[in-house]
Amino acid sequence: MTDTSGTIDVLVVDDDFMVARVHRTFVERVPAFRVVGTAGTGEQAITAVDELRPDLVLLDLYLPDVFGLDVIPRLRTAGHDCDIMVISAAREADTVRGAVRHGVVDYLLKPFDYEDLKPRLDRYAARRGRLLTTVVRGQADIDRALSAGSVPAAVAGLPKGLSVETADLVQRTLRDADGTLSAAECAAATGISRVSARRYLEYFHTTGTAAVALRYGAAGRPERRYGWRG
Image 1 (cartoon, rainbow, N blue to C red):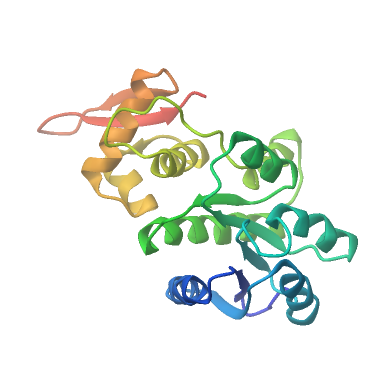
Image 2: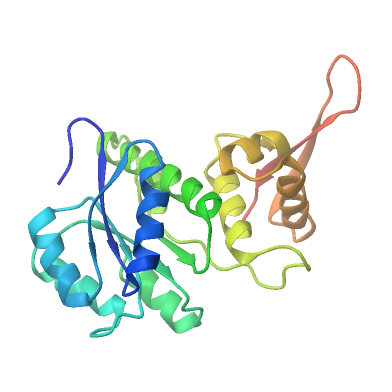
């Protein structure tokens, strides 16, 4: 149910009530988000969505009664259009592909901390806002709307010390940027340190998926700016 005040209502689904409590605490630290309920099974999740009408469901996959992805078509059949963000330890490629086919807005691997979840929620809120207010003037507007809800492909072969989750975050931030980003700007957008942002950006540059341009100021070293090439 869309709140005219801009608040995004969230249902947390996890079979471990302690984990659900932690996730609830994380979500409620992010401005504009509020948790309206929790559920510990697939059946409870379906009932809770029907009663609470959340905008977003944080969905664990390893539930005691049903696999989490099987909850999604049941929600759609019941007429619910809430968005789904998968929160799971499931790393199997088939599971990730299944989540993409079901139209999830994001996929976050457990375990994670607040700094991993917050930028994803912020990005979701921004995309949701764009989709609610989008005006289609041409193909570019449609392309942006469609790409806004997609989950990026996992980054394989990362150097030691780099994580798939953060690489996905930096990749999406760079891809969605209006123009180029510096390491500092990328850090501010993702919530990671500037040094870490620079490492990921340089990795994408070495793989050919990001271009680098130098911006010269009045004095000092030129600034390296990164743009997504795909």
